[in-house]
Image (cartoon, rainbow, N blue to C red):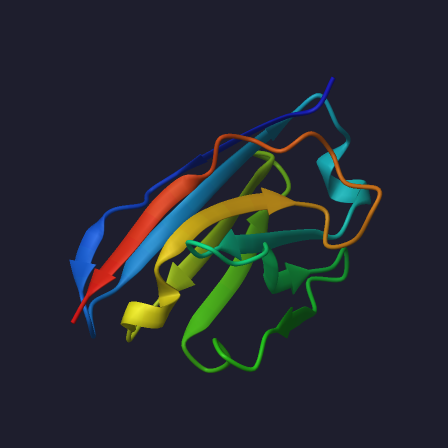
Length: 115
């Protein structure tokens, strides 16, 4: 059974940085593209950043040039470095596959950006 544990969320001021971490277990991590998603209050969950097995990356336009996704296959970890944070980045951040069928969602980690 796949388990996803996100961490690193916090309350920060606009313009500051955060680094999120996700530990994955129960899966051959290196065999999958993995992604960060986020869900803002009242909104649907959206795909933010994807890293493929080749380590190439895709980003949502709203976070391009500010966020960087990375992975450590030896540790089964995926990271999201978030710079120049904006209030609209507020939400719960989750790691998972980028597309269905996804694994069971973890609890997520809350990021709140104050203006």
